[in-house]
Image 1: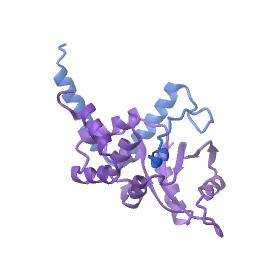
Image 2: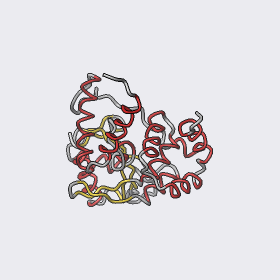
Image 3: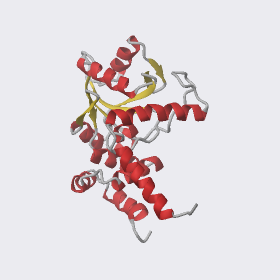
Length: 175
Length: 66
C-alpha cells in the first residue's frame, strides 16, 4: 500500500494524455504542508479530456486506462496501490482556480501536483464538514498559510461570512 | 507524576510541528501506515476488498450551486 504509487500512476496517465492536468487535494494534499492525519482515500482533481467527436468531458477514459492496468473500480473509487482513489472534476470556481494554480512538489524525486495550502484551506472552509474545519484549524495553527493570499481567495469566492463564522467559533479568544 | 496541562499541550504542539516538518516522502509513508492501522481497527479489509471502509465524501460539487 503506497501513496507514492498513486502519484506515479497519475503522472504516467497524464504523460499518456489521458488527463490534461491534475492536483491532489483533501487530506493527502494537506499532508504536504501539515502533519499527517489518517485518511482512507485519495482525492484527485483532474481536467478530463473530451472524447473524440464529443464536447462532453467524461472521466470514463481514466477508468478505462486504469482498469486496463489492473485497477479495480469500486463505486466512485478506483483502487491504485491499495488506495481508493476518487477522480473529481473541478466542480466549483474555487476548485477550478485551485487546479489552475496548483504547484509541483517532489516526493523522493517523483513530481506531484498539489493544491496550494491557501486553496486547500479555502476548500476546507467551503466544504465545511467537521473534519474540514479541523483541517482548516490545523493550517491556521501551523502558520502554514499566507494570510493575504488566503483572505483574497476567501473574498473572491464568497466565503467571507463562512470565514467570519469560523473565526468566531474557533479562533476567538473570548470563545 | 504531575498533571501540568500547559506542559502537555506544549509538548503536543511541539510533536505536531516536528511531524509537519518531516520530509514529504516520510509523511506519505506515515499516511500509508495510518491507513493500514485504521483499516485494522475498523475490521475492514487490509487490501482491495470491497468491504474496505470509506469516508463520507466531501461535497465539492454541490457547493457550486450556492
